[in-house]
Length: 209
Image (cartoon, rainbow, N blue to C red; front, side, top):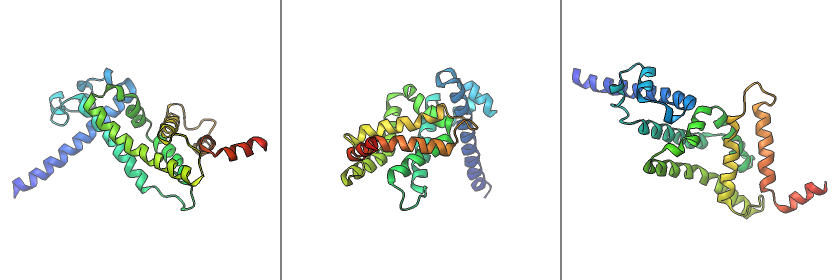
């Protein structure tokens, strides 16, 4: 009986330590950059010996990979759970969701985009696959909207990357308490996105008006 109890407890303790390692690494990588951080520094932040760190993550690269995979997994899960009115245009829904989600996770966003260059080839391919899953959501929205005449898009995949790059850049400059509120930021960026994909007839009407 004792052995049966110890194993689950030990496993739970190990999982909690791994989470603490990821939280510490997230802060370190966001503050100083992946290349400048050592495993010893992360271990010190967690309060464990450096050797204990390797029981959870054999290399610093494994930590970076875990952080990025976690970010993409949480992002995709959050999208599935997001709730908007049925009347909400799918593009509006995506833009507002993306801005809200990423503004709440500035460190994760910074690492997931700025540290891609430090991923080893196999890890880069894995992360890119997950990013493609998210991009495909917006690409599908743009393709469907173009087919129905709501949007005008020459290349849905390229437009997807352009929109996501623009929206993802917001956390790098936005500061709470500044001139614009989060709601105002959402509205301004949504207007820019709508104009970028508006059918030519609608664009001409705005220019005439």
